[in-house]
Amino acid sequence: MINVLIMIAVSEEDRERFLSIPGYDCRFVRRKDVSEEDLAWAEAIIGQPDPSTLRYAEKLRWLQTNSAGVNHYLDLPEGILLSNAYGSYGEGIGEFLTALTLASQKNLYGYDAQQKAHHWEAITFPSPLSEKKVLSVGMGHIGREYLKRMAFLGAKCYGVRRGRHEKPDYVEEVYTTEELPDILQDMDIVALSLPETKETIHLFNEEMLGKMKEDAVLLNIGRGSVIDTDALVKCCQEGKFKDVFLDVHEIEPLPEDHPLWDLPQVHITPHVAGRYEDPVNKERVLKVILENMERYRDGRDLIHTVEAKKGY
Image (cartoon, rainbow, N blue to C red; front, side):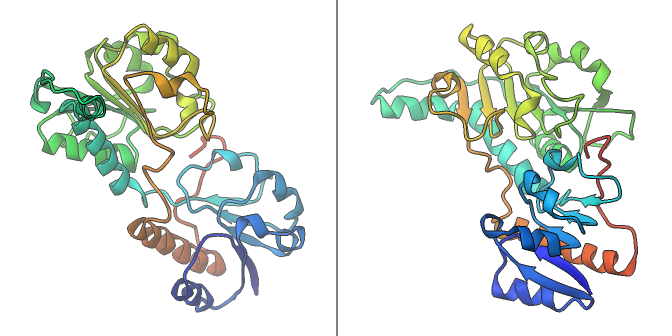
């Protein structure tokens, strides 16, 4: 029997789905309640344990996260399999990014501020999406789902990824990361959906942010570390950007006294673009996990394994 420690929220029905898979001894424990004994018992862990506690998991051979991001687990000892829930959140986050983009294009945040001030005044509308260039920095499932929607709405769409890949038919061009500095000045809307790796930390530093249009829209739903926060604050204080949407931050929760809160063009959400608790996302995640449990038991390759050196 394979001892598996399940640290994700599951309903009674979900619990039965786990228990129905032969070959496993399942132990269900909430992250905050997990003990050293639980960790020492487990050969497999499903969920997102505190990385500092994994030193007790001496028998661990496989860690399956319920998130797509795994940057906290890239230092696992050699020989431990790491897999994630890649692809489970793309559709929902693509819709989230689309909603923010449309809110910016139609100045809805500006009208919300006017309502709070009891002020009645028309705000000039920008040109339609058909005249906008939208760039997704990151062309994984999330980036592709966002650009599909933007292309459907008429925008000219572009992508950036590490290497050369086949271009989707809804994208005008796909560039490499090395070409990013040369194309930023042409983009009206830039969405970031990058994982945290050595190459992506502070990729958008003061120099890179400075290459963007003065009235560009910037969205980040990947990892907060991709943007140099101090540089972003400086740019915004100088009046750059039409809107900046941040669902992820270098420090979470964002401190109450952080200057980002009070910048008029910055809009903050608390890391909610893709949540495991959403019923649709949860079902997709569970399908990945349950399939991987069968694969691990049978000695087959897992889906969505992560290469620690790459970070994804």
